[in-house]
Length: 98
Image 1: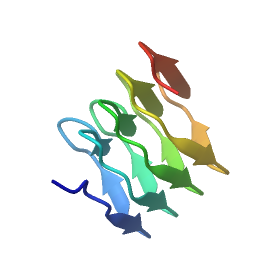
Image 2: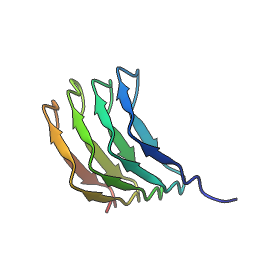
Image 3: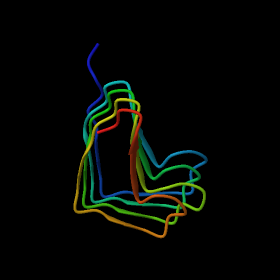
Image 4: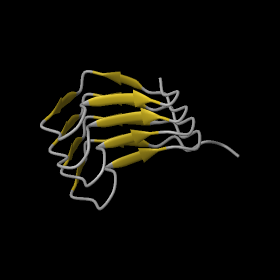
């Protein structure tokens, strides 16, 4: 089956019970020019061979998590984002994340 390739642009993504944006299972696409804040988990999480472009977003205010997490064979092209005031890492890569 083909991977999902959404274009997520010019949105306010806030106050969700989990992630602001989750990209996994070979998902690709673009996350561009969004304001992502005050979500319970990471603003953007990439795992399980997800590989999105993450450009020019404001990612902040995640009180029990971080801004962008890339792990479990996830990959991401991360450029020109403003990432601040998160309780944990701004950007974290672990367990074969790139």
